[in-house]
Image (cartoon, rainbow over all chains, first blue to last red; front, top):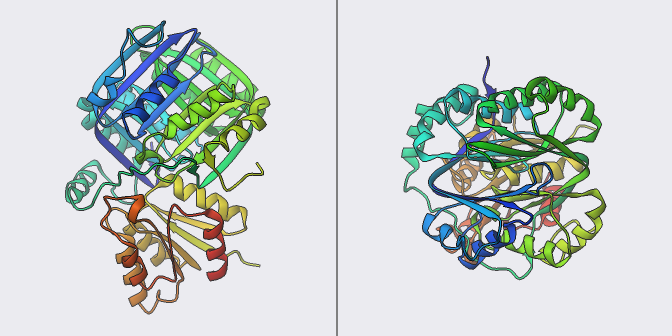
Length: 337
Length: 126
């Protein structure tokens, strides 16, 4: 099978990963406020409301395990939440995905072929990011380079050489500035979507990847995806958006590939994308989002904060109220959305 | 009328996506590259009508690429807009506003950039 040509790959090592599964409540606000209070840069936040599984999923990955876990106090946390902390993970991001499900499918397939169990995924407008255990990095990267090629490095060996050459050659961008109202490069929306949710045992991950491959071959775009742990030993929960006009075709594909396993759908929804600057290198961004939504009584259906963007899935009927709410915390250049 | 071709070179893929969508909506043809070397190779294959160039990038930073392009007779006339986060916004950076002003770039826009200002600069220079 030929490799998919993409623009680039980024790997962040020495990260930690905290996830929670909550019944009848969620941990999004707790996690976001904890990140902000401890001045932890955003890194990755993934959230899915309990639309299918009955449980909300919140996951976060950041640099310091000590800082990240310091606000996870099971006794003080919300009742009904189960927390999981993994102290040595890395994040692999490939881009641009151009909304192609087959790019995510290839990433899933490469991990599956390498026997690597992903902890979670999150998409940005341009990239798809996967969180894996640090011990799996080598196996994962070998397979990722079997699935993709990049202009900067054709092989894993080339990538390793380039990474070694760059170590210590430039300062890492770590922004510490605070803005009362956060400047945003761009706020855009994508309407006419369904939010799908599926919980799978990890041994069906490859089949889910094949379903995404079929979606891609049918030219069905996937504008949003997050995942994290689900109930049950080693399960994974995906939430993702597809155009509502392709509902029948997508249903057929999922029926063929995963036999409708714990599959649910909610629509109409839309995705709001807020982009940077430096969202991935600053603290407090996710908290500003969660706070302004809470203050306006809006319940997000799913969200990802990864790379330098936020992708927020809401009910279509909440669009006007959400955009108005966002204007209290974010200064956007597109007030007429 | 033939579309103007703008090449965006930035290691932030979401930034490339955002600016690319904005320019495409304004009728530009957009090329994308994610580091200085890839940008250089892209220019060699097809010279853009304008280059939007980030400064802090792996493999080859924007200052170096800008200087090389302006020294080369084949590429010196390509308008270049340099984008970067400097000064108070990124206290740890070694790049300064003075470094940017010292280049031969046709415009220099510090991040966080107002996308409307960027668009106006692109329309003025392309």
